[in-house]
Image (cartoon, rainbow, N blue to C red; front, side):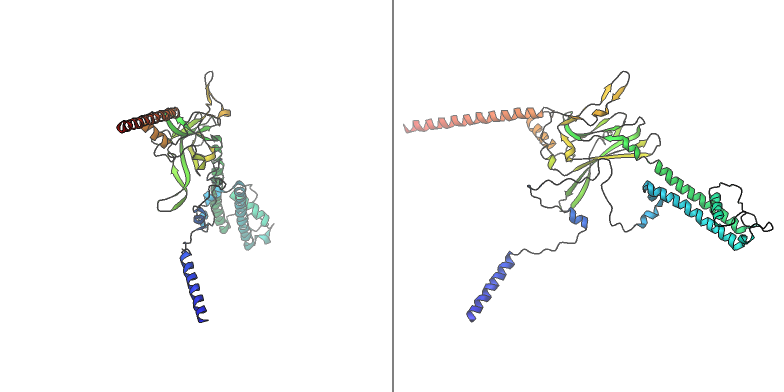
Length: 423
């Protein structure tokens, strides 16, 4: 029995040792915010369905970002003017009506209290009594007098007398506060009406962006246009690449923003937007698309945000229009259809063809691969690179065949020499 107990003990110890060896080490991960946990990269199998790309900026230019868990709401009240301007129209009009109504009721109540405390209500119709406000016989008449005072209507029926110093002080206070309320509310309404947001509705972007050769270089292009006859002054264009990345140290940066050069150093980003223009980004070594080929482009999870800024010619206010392109909206090997034609004495823009594209001969390789091939073959990087690369491949196959034949001939000569030596 003792031997059986010892054997059982040894078996249990061996099993526990094996479990200790085989069990993975428990690593306690640090607590991360909700957004950081959701943005951590996950291992996704190739066989899994492709995840739909969530837009950062929608096609109409509105940012697809919602601010949650904002506890310091008092900061909105520190800039109450901007808060009121940013409100929707229905809330803005409601606040506009409520502010005036509350001030009229507040001062009307004070006028009625002054008349009540002085005893004017007990001497209505007494010609020997001098009231604070003539013809004020109740709260309704006090409310009407408050409206007349703040809006400076002055019908002449209800007037303040010089025997009421508290009424004179109240008249001064209401006049000053009424002017402040008028300036604040009317200014808020004027700014909201004159906002240039609607002006951006007539600034249009092409539905798709294209990648093709231009002047012997691979370029990313999109088109912008202005539908109004009043032009955008000092117009400028910018582009951002929105793509998550992981640093060399392992830090994951969600929705990292990278500048896309659309002519900043050459001045091509400053536009004279009279007719639709095609904005071009040269894909070079500084470009984030340097290593992206046609086959790799659909696999990328990226978004291109384009921003057009300028001043409205009629009002002088700054206007901004935005749009974005995801990978499914970037067409490789296409160009935009021309929309500008010369008529009798003027140029005409056909906006029916604004979004149209047509296919063109474009290499399927990335700009980096094209540069390496061109440097090896010492060929100019033009639109015919693909055909010349095919010719280069044919030359290489011919050289390999010749070298194989020479090798076979050498092997035959060696065999003949060995036979002769044997004889």
